[in-house]
Length: 200
Image 1 (tube, rainbow, N blue to C red):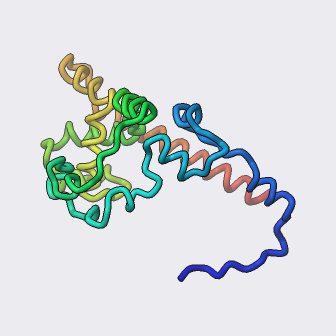
Image 2 (cartoon, rainbow, N blue to C red; image 1 turned 180 degrees about the vertical axis):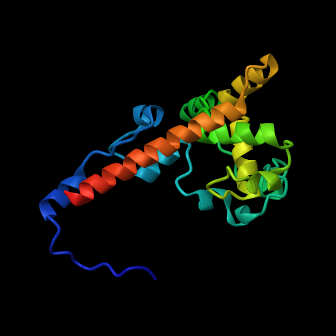
Image 3 (tube, one colour; image 1 turned 60 degrees about the horizontal axis):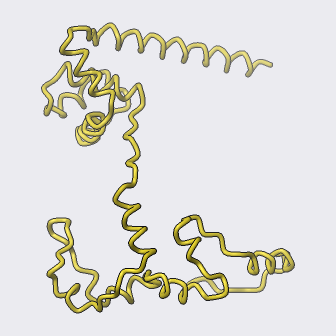
């Protein structure tokens, strides 16, 4: 049923009224330029060719499970749907969606080092052995390591790793031990700082 709406005496009614009367802020510049502030949200959506309510637009049969992960255009659901002409706003939005920049995949330096170490020490698909390695200090499962390595393969760090491996400049043990020493040193410094401040 939901929460019962009661009158809140602690709210500033003047400020609340100003908020409700405030001009609607639309972050999308395409929609913002075509928006008419005198009309309601539903009227604006209908005028721009956008769906105000997705359930109403798709109908009752929209909850079907997709087996292959793709939507079939020849499906009975899409055949029964009324087709609406695309407005200029919809065309511009579709064009922007096609040319949208993809965010580069980020993997931290420590995780990259961990992935490189595992790829060097074990066969590429032996994630069980990787999970049992003593250097797996965060006790990641085989599936978590698999996902991390697949993510690492999408980064520029993986291309650099392959280049270094082909040229023979990769010394994974030295690199990993050096990183481990720095981590231990930083932890030791933090420990001494903590002790120092606890006595003050």
